[in-house]
Image (cartoon, rainbow, N blue to C red; front, side, top):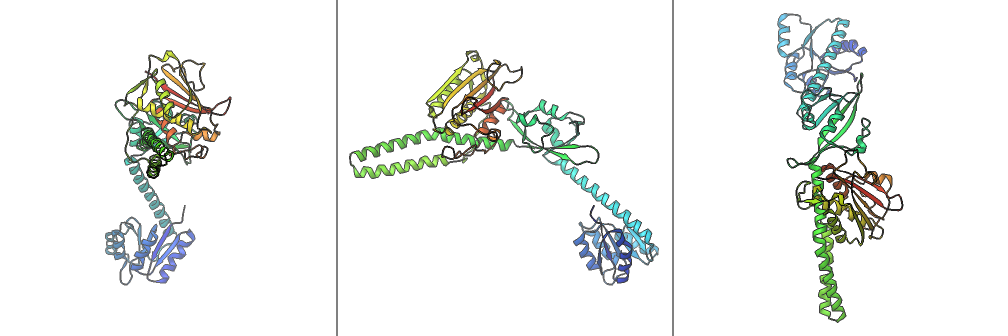
Length: 489
């Protein structure tokens, strides 16, 4: 603990030295003032633990200094002991009325004054500690962020009101197993991080409530800290809602996709027409037409570049549940259409007819966004920009298929595998490729990979539909396999 500070106020040097001789051996930091004005200034500068204030001083006496201290919000709680040679009743009443906490009468007993100062310092520090704890407790109770204290065996010891709301906890939540309760209320993502519980400090953790027809998806960010305790280990769970942040990320991504899909095709047609006109003008040696067509060509190329550079300038909302549904059977044509639009020349779709009766729980727009991102990534990161794709649409309960198998409760789910023949990724890249703004290798194809939101938003769309995802390298050659598990109805 840091040294306690004692402010000694006396207009006589002999009085200061007498108190210094008594208190210096106790290890206090001693500050001295010669008059009332200096006493007030040094009290503000040092915020002492105790003020020893002589009564009889010229100018501003001890009573006046005490009254001024008590009126100042920064100083009003500091204990003030008035040092006086006066021992009459009137003087003591005047001191009490001025705000003094106690009196020391000259000549004083050295042992007594040491014990009294020691006791007052200890009590004052304890009072300040309790006051700070009360203030902190009030802040924790009022904040919109959740705080949960867990015991060593993962039992809830305390949850503030915000945490009770986020976790759907009863007011009396002590003793509830945190992880078990969290799994009942939310999807825990990324799953591989939660599997390391309780050794999860420093890991990225999310709790997600999927979207329904009645409410939007909810995302909670979880931070875990160890609490230093003299008796038993504790963990502090800090919960913040990040739904708005994730929604914004998805809207940015949706807009990027809209720009790419809706505008680049007509811009390419304009560019093609300008090139054709320019070619014909040159062929026929029409100088004026050559100049005009060159200007058209320059303008078309500039427009194409501007379209590619446009980012998040409008608000575009998309949800999992709205925008039409996609049957498992129709998913083949959705994927084939994206492959053709993305200029994928070689692709093969394998579909099992046992999926015919089912429909995906994702909307058409969400499905299109997911597969456009995966397919465009396969093209973008292929060394020749011309991948061969194998897309498999399989019922998940067929345990002979795929590596991303779930538990026995996997009926009414589809396993989608998209296999390309491009590059392989390092373990570090595979771990981080689903994180927002992560770019596995933006220089591989000689072009900028963009904002890096795509696969992150794919992950969120799949989470919100209660699905799963993963990516791994092909075992037979260079290339990537993306697996999705998508619920069906």
